[in-house]
Length: 450
Image (cartoon, rainbow, N blue to C red; front, side):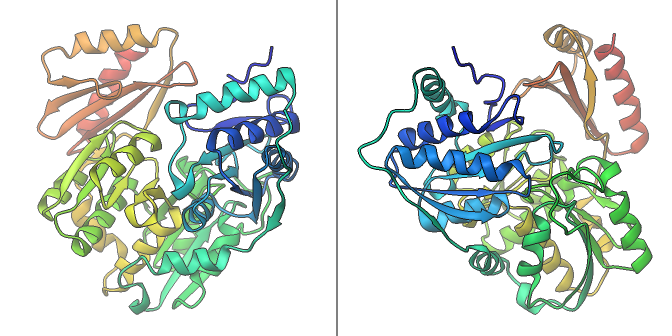
């Protein structure tokens, strides 16, 4: 019997091509998606991975076999797919494995209006239906749908620029952009067109084999080239995108990496200036500076679990104007509560370009704590190690919203969470000083690693 459990994850489909994900499975998933949504039309896009051509075509064939039409948006970023699902009012499928290595591919699915689909909101149902189709064959619908091509890039670019206050009045800036051979190489030139930017492109050639470095900016090793170029050219800032360009990392004029929490605080302040008193979402490993800034600016901060499905659910529930994650995902109410690395980049450009100082000075008031970054440990007994940590720090306030968060007082806290897909425990520590952060990190790791 067919079993797709190895590739249908909590939020998307992802696996090795073709050993785990092939055209037959993509076709079955397309038919199941069409059945689940009951939509008359579905929009499909793909990133630069070579396997996306065959997989996307097979998925479209599955959709049309059930009588739905397919709008083929071609090459695009994940947030371009969200734009398509939002403006066209149709469900969407994005073929991408984001920052994963070249041999992977996957599918991110959403409903009309870019509403997320996860395990609890339809993905498990789609998996079961696709498994049935793989065992029994895909039944023919009453009609066969059609496939049509559409061009959405210019509309996407115009839409994003219209959402960022002050962008049309920025001063000239010099920018280095590292696209990592991913979809930023396609979208950045169109989005930046017409802005007073002198842009130096790094690795804009679309190449799913990632010949220069992994398209994963959360790994500091993949930012080295960008940092060096910013310093060498005396640029005002640097931007790095992941493979499907839904995440963005920023480097300041000194070549220093800006914490995504600091960028979250900056954008939160800008959005609260536009809509005073609004709600801002942040996940529980985001810096405490974020809720502090939100409160200082008269907003309401809401803390959530890690993961885009939780962020988007809270965005919808609270009507939040903005949400940020420490992983470099940024969510905007005016963008259908979806995440857009490009929109975050435009906010950074607007904030810098509407004042005269350097980026480091602009961000100094938002950069208040020292963080460990995510430290991963391979463990056999995740639950047992977390229980040991809980006992070791039993005298401190704790909560279990997502993993275990322990408040050690005076601005020092840590969170430890089990990975959903690997035998890992993920540790994040923050305190007012780097010395205290290093001390707590070592103390917790001693328990984690036995």
